[in-house]
Image (tube, rainbow, N blue to C red; front, top):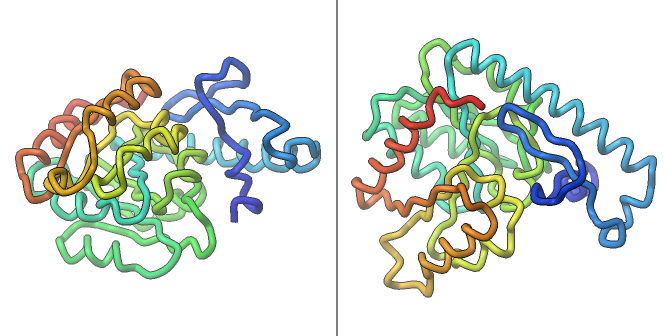
Length: 258
């Protein structure tokens, strides 16, 4: 799918000096080293990809306009499969008075949306088919199925993938990236684009720390190199006080749309 959608060559290291930037929560686009991707030597391919991304960026801003007109702050949740995005959203409502809805992204099934609905949480499922990420058009379509007048927050739970979702602005204001203890602390350096995009990193399943070779100190060190301004919180749904820290972060960031 990456060859079709262009996400493999679309957005690159925001620390590079070339390229142009986008405001309101989206991120910089930069040229990749031509030698590392032969597709970038083809001007026609590159032109098509840029047109796709430009259209996506326009739609993303349209989504943000929708959210802001309703006084909603939107958060993009990204992680690999099984890191605990849906589990977090299932439990979070117990610890906050903030009302939220969820746009769910998966290749197939409505399992995650069904889990949230069972908890009384407004959720809408997007089935992407072969697509490895959500884009702004998918999210816009889903907004017509969400009652925006009744919520403070809209979470976009992206397709489980530590690569492609980081490349597409979907119209949210902040990015939350989850990394579970069983995945290992090496994933931060292995997938730097995702973690550079993050405003908050949640280390999930932290109750398993004694049973895995996972160093929270090493995680902090890697994050500091990649993204000095990012916040890191260790959480476990079995430790309610850890979710209260997430709620505090949300309280501090609701209404922050720049």
